[in-house]
Length: 150
Image (tube, rainbow, N blue to C red; front, side, top):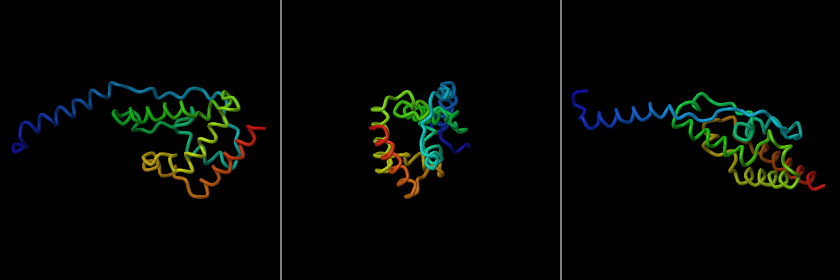
């Protein structure tokens, strides 16, 4: 420790102090009640729950690291933004046109490999979609759009 320059010690101490103080800035990790869950084919529901629900429902399972800043800020932001764009727990509050639009968005995101995001799948390996699961979601969303249009 004696050979470490004082400036390095000061920088490390400041960094640790900032991380410690950052813990005081808490994110909202609540799960509002489920308003009206999506009614999808029973074959697709386990896939949606495993892959989508942590960010796109009011049933988020908050991981332990969601309480540690600054990672908690990223997790909280992703969940709140995800719920804002698509919330399976509020599906019944969307009108038919909105549901159709969201279903088409699901298909587009899944088809292009944008959902789930790579960084989420990197941490949550069980959220990775197999090619057959991708096809299942695409087929389900296309059929669900047809049902909405009727």
